[in-house]
Amino acid sequence: MLAKARTPRKNRLVPENHELRAFFENVSIELASEYRRIYARSSEDPGTAGDEGEANWANLLTDWLPPDLYVTTKGRILGWNGAASPQLDIVVLSPDYPRKLREKKLYLAGGVLAAFECKNTLRRPHINKFFSNAAKISAIAGARQNWGTYFDEAFSPICYGLLAHAHGWKSKDPAEDVDALIDAELQQSKHPSELPDMICVSNLTTWTKEFHGLVPQKPGLDPDRPFIDAKGIADGDFCATTYFMRWKKWDTIFDQPMDIPRTNPISELIIQILKHLTIAEKARRRIPYYYQAALSPSSKSTVTSKLWDIRKIYSQHLLKLMGAGDWTIHNNPDPKNRHHLPGA
Image (cartoon, rainbow, N blue to C red; front, side):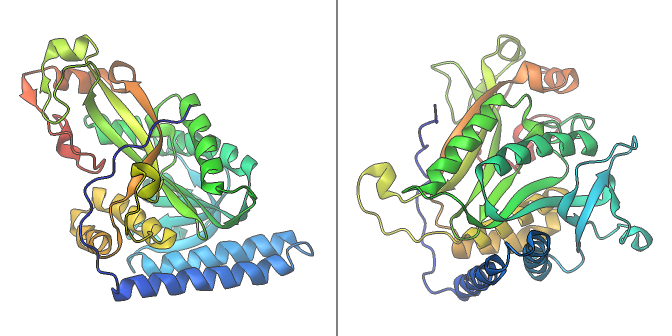
């Protein structure tokens, strides 16, 4: 059963005619035009159609991600232990990735910042395979080997997403159909680090993952500043939560019309990728938060969520840090704020 949508954060003013909005609208128009062109001949040569769709997305990421990153197509990720991931359509390499190895189609996991699967038309089986591959890539990347902060232990080091020009659903609200598929995959997942980070359908919406590292689980605990102590950790008074979110009309949430601008799926995608990059390099924060201030009306709502027993998903090392003393915690919803937990 899908979780009820959380109340969106209080809306702030967003410029209606900001140039960035026009820039991203032009990108959406270009992608739609390319999809129509590719689709017209896709039955003749599906392989070429797929390659052209991947090239569209690779060019978009090259245009909008920092220029010191290297965006390439087709390849697998190579773990430190020699294991290789399933084939990926797009890989984003770090600035310090060896030039000599850029054209080798086995990419060293330690130098991969992001990876994406691309589909011209998203369909139901693609979602299942995408979540399955996310767990495999997380294992290759060594997500749970870096202990000490909830982010290290609950996220894969590699940002992983699914990019599609369009979708194959014919229902009244295809976004809700995808919501249900995401919910089914989330509820079957074994650990938060095995989950993907985003799904973007350029003519529909973008789904993004959020994670609350520590929230009160029992009634009566203050959700804003819960008091933490060793006994509360041991007794399971607190849990972690994964959310998948997307833009929704506010009148569908509050049953009253509200004039909130719709977010552009492409701009939301770029903002989320850039935010992931800021985790390792704080100096990169200015651009994504500028984009967010100019474009995002803060109207994303939860479409599904899952609670995690922190005693099962965090290492004993982190649990000991959390129970080492008495302290309080701000329940900040931004998963990128690593100061949530001691040792972060």
